[in-house]
Length: 139
Image (cartoon, rainbow, N blue to C red; front, side, top):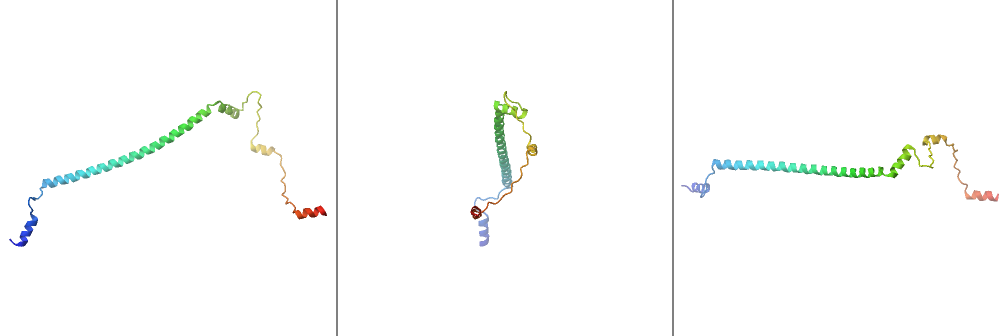
């Protein structure tokens, strides 16, 4: 054997090292494919969780807005059921009055303008300067 052959033999064959079998390679390939599928499934699950969180936030905002509207409507309902509001509506909408009160109904603004007397427009006169006033006083 030559020196080169011995070096090649020494590097190619190490102690206890054997060439991997076909079944071992197949097992490694199956493990890699399984891990890729598992990773894909994990990414999809994370995306679904993110979408669900976004949907929950939107629903919570909508719920808060609805609760606020409910509070406003509740206060409006309480106001409309009060005696003062009912009395005001009876006076304004139906023209009703208590005993001894006089109802005064005024026409709309346009009719009032037509009925009002026309006032002549005043001309703006500049005031006389003081020196002219003094001259008029002494002359």
